[in-house]
Length: 419
Ligand SMILES: *Cc1c(COP(=O)(O)O)cnc(C)c1O
Image 1 (cartoon, rainbow, N blue to C red):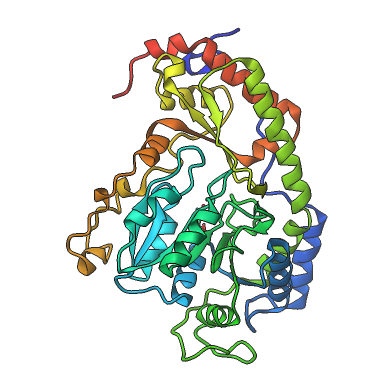
Image 2: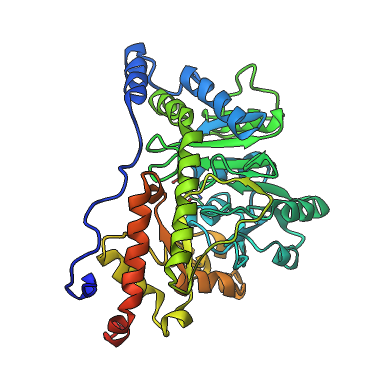
């Protein structure tokens, strides 16, 4: 084998992976249909394409209602608002997630409380939730991260016992099912993103699933400038809203994306299985996928995570492995997410973040989250879900590149660290 590309050798792969996002004539026709209709915006709300997609998406996930929105950050904020979470309330979130999960809490002047993750699934560790509950706790936001799902049985049991709201962050979990119930349909709300990198996309966009008509109507009002239009006005009082409507172009594209989605997840599932088999067969140690709970009956699977064990690589750091694999033509990421307490937004500056005003003693670093820290700093290796959209050659190349880096690991161990 040639020497490592990171040291000037020949990269194992030059070809890029499957093009993303996926589209075909269907999207082209849908976009023209909206263009010619001259009804481009989200008003009247929900507009024609938006109503149609909301109904189709609700049915697909198995929710009585789906409400479309500008993106998957504001969906979290609106779910908190519709659920009555606000000033100085505490919301339990996993430490390892995208900043929006905690950011949405800050946005409604609530306090994100960071819970550690389960090291086997990278989702919130339900056994650690109760110790974080105080009189001020109002909600839990489990995140169904990458290829796994939070233990929703345990989360719902705790929520019921303490009368807490549950908002599932499903930005990674379109199509994913827990005991045949769709992600986002178990808690009070589910929050979905259709941003460019997500499994189903219109460039930007979001959806909220919910169970009650009151929640649905509040959400529809919140995203439509606070209007209280019949027949979507069956809630008490009025709300200050914003224009967070989705456009008809986005909704029309999403209808096409949904129509091919089941085939897409079936194909990526098969390719992921082939990849894991090949990786095991290669004999390279110290790389394991996340565990999938047997109660997960279908996986949408955003991205793909391998857990890197540096002990099996003679002490090599994850970041050096990631750099070497990138150089071989296999793009991957180490610290895609890190524990949010260490994010530069936390601890807080009152000029950018109101939490110190609400609680002068607020210091997110008081919550210890060792599993989350380890995952972000040393263990996780993130691959794009697009690696699993094409065929066997792609997954074979990833395994060959990993094996090549493993075989030549001594070269990486010898190279000076940048620190
Ligand atoms: C992408 C993402 C969001 C935010 O979605 P946007 O549509 O980009 O605003 C929220 N939570 C998680 C876990 C995400 O991955």
